[in-house]
Image (cartoon, rainbow, N blue to C red):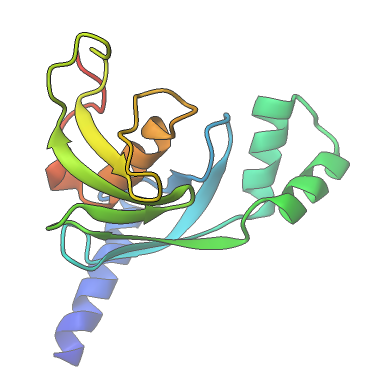
Length: 163
């Protein structure tokens, strides 16, 4: 069993090195450049999917340049202090319950036809409020769905938006 776990861990590292599997970056907020660097991913598409990510100076620099339009080391230092240093994203891909920086959510599946919201492809419920995410940045839909897609890729085979 230990050998098999070791082989899976090596395969995961190689998959990331070759660009396969989940993205090398994962979001922690809705603004451009609010990303963490993935350092490991385990059990993707299972009941115990996890992605471990860290915030480094390169991530902070990208946020400062792309969003704040500030090229100073002061901005990078401030971003390093304010952003999460590390985070573990988790999901039970069978139940759809997952943890993102914004809270706990449940992926329901394809969105129901709704004349008020024709853009989201999937329904997600914020377990803290019990409300559906409506697709807006304010609701957290884009970030939550991208995180769930990275944790449970077979559940979200296409775009998170209706075509």
